[in-house]
Length: 219
Image (cartoon, rainbow, N blue to C red):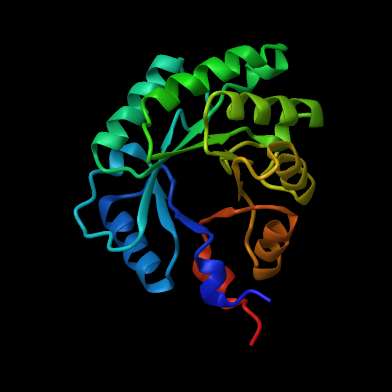
């Protein structure tokens, strides 16, 4: 059974609200350090941070939340975030390319961003799994792997179709076969939700209500 501290190490403690302020981000970081989360995840205009991150890594989104940006814009946004101190980039793909039967175009845009996120920086690819068919989820995962990404991620948390599901996480985990990480994000609000995602194959969790989730740990 996972302990509270162990589950915290899976978490990207997230604040992507449009009205977030630098003070909010500093509070997020302070809470992340207190809770022992893996990272914080913020918007690109919130960096560079003014506070010391300590052992907490910094993840920054690109092409967020719609993914309807050119590959060049996403790559430039990612490069700027890395230059400003980001350890990880969470990019949103253009799911319309999948809907149009163009997975190679998805691979090309991911590869463009990966070129701007050199190792040891980590690239996570948000596929909006709730808006995709199983075949499209598989195609998105294969495109991410072929492009050199490090993770596939379920959701932005902003799409009306919804966030992470057990089915999507299981399918993504089977498709990448341990070669990439799997991040479950969107709508995970309880301890049981979080544990279920890990059991389904998630190796990272995106949570905005991290303290409430961790407070649900069994005694």
